[in-house]
Length: 446
Ligand SMILES: [Zn+2]
Image 1: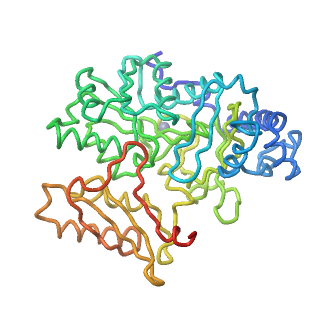
Image 2: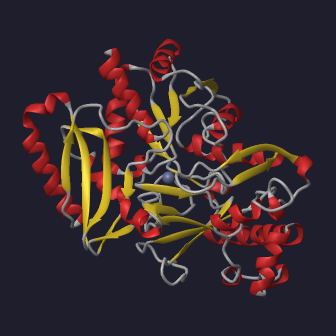
Image 3: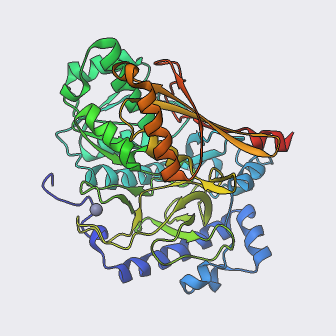
């Protein structure tokens, strides 16, 4: 078993037409499940005039209305407590509670049954196996285990695979680094921001070179950093390890992963999920590679609170190339490139926050942290970018700033007010970073 390339050799090498047949079959089943068992789902489907027996093809699936996060929030504020009419199993079958960790708005509650929880672990097993996790690995999870799903499911999948798992929950960053050193951990999981921050703490405060520790692979999730080439390079250099991306969400599941071949994108686990890409303006489903849209996703096997055509607002595009690893599942190019909500027009130009990160992390002499503040003076948009210059580059501040300004103009077509801040003065984050602030949105809603 440890020599096996794929976690599930059958599903991961299934020809595309067979995958499509499987997806259609599973979609019919989960749609009927939601229709029959949840008043919330039945109401929106009845309003759209779609019934379970109408689903015969992928064209029919597109007639099924999508569900947005705000709809889930509303239904959960109504009876029956605490999940409203979206729950599809008796309350006593719910075995675990989680909630969404988004940076805006009220959280959505996420009930799962024991069967759902096993499904979470199975989905994560595809990810970890594809990233080279094997029973001999000792996996350290430097994360405050709490009400959010991250990295609980990764933890259980690592156990399921047969790895030895060290839960690094309530330890502080220094204690975590010492534990990795003491136990010679070989792998870990975390947000890219925190994993970079750990490396900084090790180097600057503990005089430990993280690349000399025994970590040889890192799974990043929660932010798109590990799919941003310059951020990935920084992570891999700091830790002397392979860094892999994974995108998932509480209300969806663990739907995608980067494999060991690092193909510049993420595999969709399309035996377990149906991913569709919709044009942000028109809603038209995009089939061809190279055209960005927002992801509409169905978790094909999740039961307690189904995720059927969920409008995730993640911006993705199909890749045209198959992956050299031999998995037949489709790839999304460059991972999740942003959120439909975050990609905003500044001075009439479309700006994705990930584009700024790509530039900042590509300039030598700059620290890992940065902050972007967009506001409006009179009728003109202004972007302020705060960065830190590393101690070893302090005497070349002007050069670094010029390089940064040039690269930003080249890659994003915009001008920025750059502010050089002192070392370690910008905020550090343990979970998801909040580095992009659009003050125009605030003034519009006030
Ligand atoms: Zn691959």
